[in-house]
Image: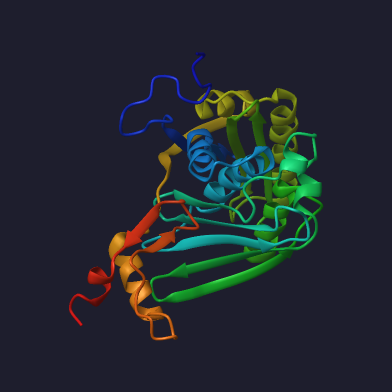
Length: 295
């Protein structure tokens, strides 16, 4: 059996490999560049949800893009990316926290009539709006809605940044699929407050042109950064880990079931209450004893 292109030599703690995001500054133009390898994280989501081709490809793009947009989260902040769409995938829900922990999936995981016949992502998504919510444990602190642009997820995320931050930004995403995901990568280019619009456009156009010419991108964010900034005065200012991690726990599931209460017909709790987490697909089977304990 051939080795998965994502796994390489994984450790038991990271069975699909370790993902990274590198942040760099280009001087004297005052432009920052973030390069993310989210391949293993997207692959774990594909694996957990038993996703078909289209679901996996959308997850790859949203995973790479969402972690880039979450680079500046602080404390217990989270970004949620959700959409209800007219295409057969139905929509999606993804979330990233301040530690770049990613979770989520599309509404439909497998599309037998589309996955095997080359249906493009744009057709699988259809029309709709991208809703981005920034929240903390205390509640929602920001909510923005962007009309989705015919399946161009990079353009949708770029437009969201312009709408929400009024910051000059460019987003580039790249993923591969061959019976399973092979890579999920992203680049974010942003103007710092001291950057000029002309200076940003010059750098952004150069970096984007180089990135587009390099597709498919290597699963090596440092090498990709070096390639797209070749000849520029660029220095790295951060290197962070990305991973798939869900916040669901058995205690939270029990608390949720208790808040809903037993069936209204008076039959009491079923022998087993089976709950599947929509974010990570973990299954929790809860007995009546656990739901009545402490009452």
